[in-house]
Image 1 (cartoon, rainbow, N blue to C red):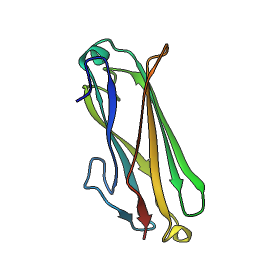
Image 2 (cartoon, rainbow, N blue to C red):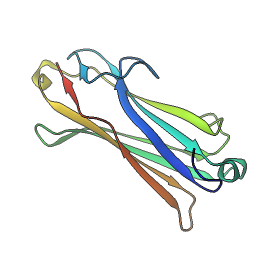
Image 3 (tube, rainbow, N blue to C red):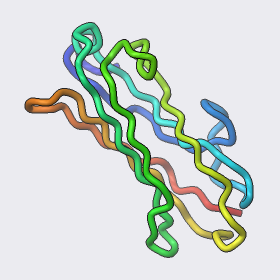
Length: 129
């Protein structure tokens, strides 16, 4: 759990469904989900401050960016309704050309506008099979 005035990205993983079981391989042609679990301390959450979450999914095999996601709002909104949440970002089906490519998702959480609290997390590596 983060401190009273802190936020943390605590877990990042890939699954076949939102908040599903962690997978280290995704069948090509099948959609999947990048999950980031995050926590906000009581003071930060109760204050309703602003947050931004930026996500990059990279193909480490060929060095390309597969997709990016942006999520922004204020604590207590529909995207962050409780101090502990799981943000699920959909990763579309990957084509046959990506078979045996290794991927990784990286996220940054930026909280506040002046002297922001910043936290990074990255998923385990996963492969398109």
